[in-house]
Amino acid sequence: MTKKITTISLLVIGIILISFYVISSTYSVIINVLDKDGQTEILNDISIRDLLIDENGMYNSTYYDVTRELDITEEEAEMLMDSIPLNMVLDEIVVSIVDYNFHNKDKLSNNELYNLIVDGINEDSNINNNLRLKLIAKTNKYINDISDYMYDIKTVNQGEKA
Image 1: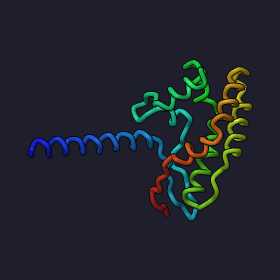
Image 2: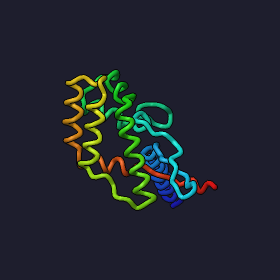
Image 3: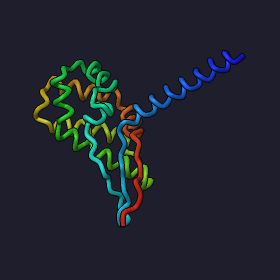
Image 4: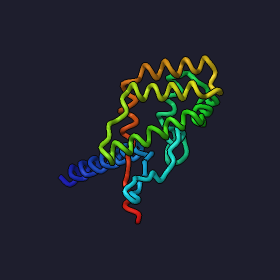
């Protein structure tokens, strides 16, 4: 009987640890905000790179999924992660996520997100035409998933600043 209880206890602990790992790796990017004079201030910058690396600075599964799906090289992935226009688009999306979570504003629609991303792709002169076409095609393919992925980024209010 004791062996059975020990086995069940270890199984439950294992499930809890696995659940914690999955939750913590899913939310490795957190938007931290602070209320200041009635305004919500975003405390941390979030880049495309932040979405594709884990807390140890290693590429996460999303990075590998994206590079495999786009069939791009590591150099092309690096260029996209460092793209100023695409990171500016991400900044706009982060503001929208904060507005949605803390000010009850509407989410950007999938079409609005798609158009922002395509504009960012088209603004970056470092992206060659072949890669540009791949990015736009894949963005269009996953248009219905973009909003769900982006608005799942965790936001945390760090309190109020006088």
